[in-house]
Every structure is written in C-alpha cells, then in structure tokens.
Image (cartoon, rainbow, N blue to C red):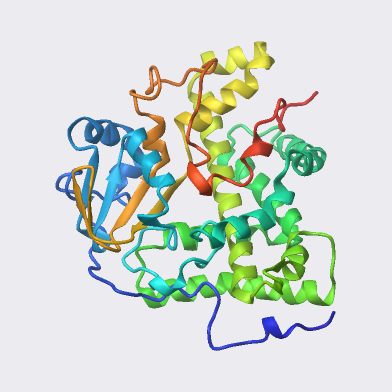
Length: 389
C-alpha cells in the first residue's frame, strides 16, 4: 500500500491543542498557600511533594487554585478514586493541566484515545489495544528487553560515577516502545525531547507549545507514511489497518494513540525505574536485602510503584456542582494525584514509609477506573527484567 487518503496533509494537525476558553494565564510563581493557591509546577513540589500532600490531607483534603483557569487537588485516596471512577461528572478529554483546555466537542474521543476518551467511545478504543498488552504479548518482549538491559549495564563497567536515570533508566522504555511501534531505535534522543516538550512545556506561550506538539505529530505522520510504504508487524501498522464501527481509524485517532503509547509508555516507565534505583542507592539496607532475598524483588517493585508513583493525570469538571465540600465550576481542572492517594494513611499502613516486603499493596500507581494503565497486567510478573539469571 503506497498511500492512504486518511493521511494526506490537511489544514488541521492531529494533536492540535490550541487555547480554548482560557480563563487565566497565571500559572507559575511563589505559592502563598498550598490549600488555596497550589501549583504542581513549582520547585518545592518537584523537590518533595509528599509533605505538602500530607499537610493538605489533614487541613484541606481538596485544595483549590485560581491558576490554570481554576483547579482542584484531591489528596485522599477515597476522593481520588471517586473522581477516577466517576466518568459522568468528570471528563478525560484533557489529561495534562495547563492554562487552556481543548474544546468540549473534542469529547468523547479526545486527542490521544483512549486515555483522552470518555464513555462510551472509550471502551471500544481501549479494546482495540488490549491484545498488544496481554501477559503473553508482554512475555514475548522480555528476552529482548532483558538482553538490552544487560548491555546497558555492561556499558557502565569501569565508570566511577553513573547517572542511573540518564545512562540506564531512560533508555529501556525508549527501546521497548520503539520496537513495539516499529520506530528506529536510533530515534531515542528525539523521544526524550518529545516527552519533555509535552510534559514539561505546559507553561510555554501557546504558539511555542503548539510548535513543539506539531514536531511530535510531524514525526508520527512520517512514521505512518513509512509504514504505509513498508508494512510490517508492529503496533503502527496495526493501528493503520484497525477498524472501529466498520471504518478504519481516522488520522487523528491513529496518531493520537501513537502519541499516547510513545509519551506515556516512556515517561512513566523511566520515572518508575529511575525512582526505584534512586531509592536503592540511598537505602543500603533495602539494597542488601534484595540482593540476599531475590524472591522479594516483585514485592519490592510493587512497593516502589506505590511509594514513588509516576503518574498524575487530569480531569475536567463537566458542569457546575458542589462536590464533597468544593464548589466546582464547569471546566475546572482536577489534578488527579495517584502519588497522593498512595501515601494516604487511611488507605495504607505506614503510608509514608517504603516497606519492601509489604504484603497488602492495592496501590493506585497504574491509575484507577476505566483509564487504568493498559500495560499493568503485563507488569505484574514474577521475574525482574534486569536481573541476570
């Protein structure tokens, strides 16, 4: 197949997130009171959000801010879970808090289905992807992933100082996702830039943010055209040929889903791997125990996910309402902090501690509700992909 009219140039670029209904452009600056002026973009939050979340959970469990055009931050597990499961009052059409919102008519599909999709469309869009993330499908990726991890470790031999995040953790998901989507492994540095553009560039002027997002989708469209000319057995070719409701997916759906798999697959995984290594580097007792008791590795991995959950998602309030003491307005943001939920002492015993042999650990690191991570079933495995056997 040499061409597909779905992917011919058009005046509208998939993933375009032009400002809609902007109510305020105040985003950054010193926080006066985290209960009434929170901002997850400030250095204090990035350095150590847990004391802030603990304080809010005690005195103002659903914090508010006028930044970003208005938003709310629940910090209790029960509130985070309630919002995650309530698709009737909270929309997923935007998943990253910023100072502008995609138009309501973008629902129920959203820009990156199925993570940005609302029911009933969400169910069918998610179902399309499930075969690629079953345990058996993930198991087929394990030998190559394990070999790649070993090669990264071997390359560190002889170095006095190693940046475990930059030299190890970041490379693993970039290679795995590239293989799944059928992208050139050599494009890894570009993937890192794409992640930074989307996840860290939310405070940029709209024109600059649009330009950065466009670079990602231009790359994805190039990959689509390459797959049209050279079909192969990977997720990109699968999406190009997949059908929903008797029709092939539109270009916005195809590239939006590719963007989701690329960005979310890389960012969450390297964060989780990096945080786990960081903990072990600063906690010799845990490191030594895992070296002596390898059977604890899967249990410890779950605890690292709980304690250092890498995902915070957004929702948009559908209509004005009074919800658990908060007067929410239509299109207010909800910063859905799974890390905060995972540190709630009402849900977890010794919630602020990292207990590598924690027996009961129903954490929310993979999300809750209909948008729970597609890859989570394959992540709960009995072996560690980086341990030599």
